[in-house]
Amino acid sequence: MSNILLIDFGSTYTKLTAVDTETESILGTSQSYTTVESDIINGYENALSELRKQTGGIVFDKRIACSSAAGGLKMVAVGLVPELTSKAARLASLGAGAKVIKTYSYELTKSDLEEIDSSRPDICLLCGGTDGGNKEVIIHNAGMLAKSTGHFPIVYAGNRNAADECAEILASKQCIVCSNVMPRLGITDSAPVQKVIREIFLTQIVKAKGLSKAQDLVGGILMPTPSAVLAAMKLLSKGTEREDGIGDLVAVDLGGATTDVYSMCNGHPTNPMTTLRGLKEEYAKRTVEGDIGMRYSIKGILEASSPYEISTISGLPEDICLEKINHLAENTDELPSTEEDQNLDVALACIAVRTAVARHAGRIEEYYTPMGVSYVQTGKDLGSVETIIETGGALVRTGYAEKIGQYALYSPNDPMSLRPKKAKILTDRKYILAAMGLLSTEYPDVALHIMKKELV
Image (tube, rainbow, N blue to C red; front, top):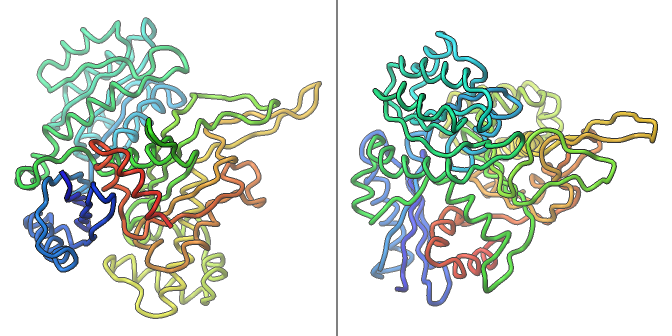
């Protein structure tokens, strides 16, 4: 098999990448509006027509796809305490490619249930309690979810000693029981939960979002788009049995509505005087900043910064910055058309990248002991990461990827943030990361070679 068409049915654009696996090369790339409101196939056909101009009449031996169309995979997570099981649930969900729209802790209330129903999630993850630990809270929450008017599957990943009782309580719902996301205190086991979430996506969410026709056409939608990007980043970092990867890395995907950050590293404390507090995070981590984006969430960038800072970076007066930001918030499909617009987009991208990476990275706090100053670390230490990968239209389009990428690095203005101290900036100029994650499911060595060649 030689020519493979890799498709990403996105919320805004459908992106195609044609690959020759024998020559380990990209034959062409294209994109078109997804058109999920009418027929998702229209966007696909438009992008394919554009791709044909580059590739001619080649025949594709296989077509495989990922999707985040219609807003991706929306999930609510219900746990016991925020610092432990709720955080474990959130990390597991994000690692499976879901977008966690709300996390609930302790016992669900009536208003919590009403909020869950009104948010219309695709999946609910129910967890809480270590194996053999607290059962009362998760049993209560199962009882509340049994009263839900929503039609979403519930994944049970809590205390195994309460699993049977909760399954009986949720008998009228679609309830899938898997192993505990936190079987022991401070120890997470995300893989079983992530596998179930991806299976639900493939068997149910694809159908619910009107993607069944697309799946029949292309021969299979394998996974949510964020899972594909995560797979690509893990492959690029670790490599294959035959070839080493490039080592620890951080990737930033800056979109119009959200900013996703991925880190591939252990992130353990590097200072012997530092102790780790909270959950030990997994090597492959993904976070989603739902309030930080270049168009739909542009006001979130402003709230994370100030008109003065945006003015300073862009070189535009504060009143002009605010005027343009308000305009873009109402005209989310508008691209930069003047030098002023371009300068503003660069400034917004700089702040979005800084904010998202700072939230993703861990932090340290000082405390004093009879032995002197010591530190407590929460989250990952990204200080030694030497590669940052940028993707997303705003990063690629501006031509200032290097400048924007510098805002992901450590700054003395925020000395307790464990962001990378010094890193090489690579840019995904052809939007191939999701495609390479798809390709890696069958041709990992080819995908690795292409990424090493194409990321510049």
